Length: 242
Image (cartoon, rainbow, N blue to C red):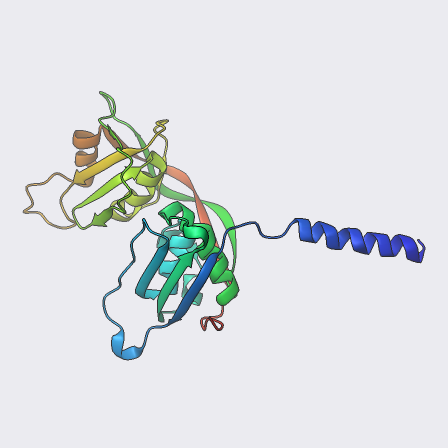
């Protein structure tokens, strides 16, 4: 192979690499710094619906969960992320509205660039639950398109605009196992469900499993489920300069 051919191949490789450049959107400006020790306290997760996102007193594993849309029990190597707290303030370019979905690619890039975060995905089988339609059919209220973030709290959850896959993710924590959506139901819905807290034997509310059937017409069936894991390969816990 002569020099000209080698030169052409090298140029082609460069052009290909440039063509494969990261196309994910970025923040126009973003500041992320360790929370001062004297100010560490309650986590303020931040709100969506504007072109800005501000969150304080959050751990790196919290930011990873938001960025990749995955709960902590689906993070492998989470101990590499440490327990340091951070304050993040970011603004989207061109006035783009930041929602839970649109912030994720931006936050992924931010973590990769500032924390040198390297991850890969893996699928493993775990004891879990399949979310399915109960006998009698689903009792779901179509979403009105609300931009509210929603909340999951001990004894209930309110999700103004979520699909069944999103509901399955939210159910993993109170159910204590991974949950996958097998309802076959498409679209977004307004979820408002109340159930007894763990170990609250005096509660007048039904268990999570009963509440799902009575209030939403859904149920959880025990089975081995494929769970997508996010594996933390490496990370620098000290962010680079803003």
